[in-house]
Image (cartoon, rainbow, N blue to C red; front, side, top):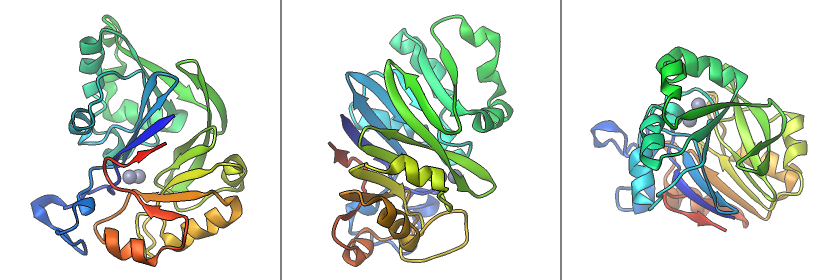
Length: 253
Ligand SMILES: [Zn+2]
Ligand SMILES: [Zn+2]
């Protein structure tokens, strides 16, 4: 299994619009962050989690030339903005792409991108809409994954596990079910939006992550979905052993 962090930025990316770096040092290239997304290659199948506004650039910059499935974590703009690009992607690839999302997320997607659900888009190879369970196993591309939901703002965000790797983005509360699902993993790629600066904004900070990691004890904890307050070097220096700060293009094996 290979994972590439296509983006480890928060909703606004960094630098933010108008070249605003907020707390970030412009001298650290790892502070340049696209919106949160990962690429997973498993048994030859190519899967992307979330399609934010930089999706096309992230795919091109990372040399990705095929795509079998997309998992959507939740309906916020920074995770879904490029979803309409997938229709074109199916035509270019000449095969359909499975799009997995929870019932709750699919309801939001239908409101925002209703045209993607119309029957005429099902003509040529197109999007195959699939519904994620709120908690449990699902099979995509012949591969079994586990999913569960975390609480984020007013909604739920789907998290994913494959064997000993898990990806948890956009969360402020980890339910007991999630802790159980994460037992036995070795690598946890997890949102730490607020870094060293706690804030009640539907996201987590380093103390929230540590509390969860203490119950799971993975070998590696990699922090992602980082806001423009979270400087790469400042956070790295404050982390205990076993913790890392993600950066765009980071490869996890
Ligand atoms: Zn987000
Ligand atoms: Zn969100």
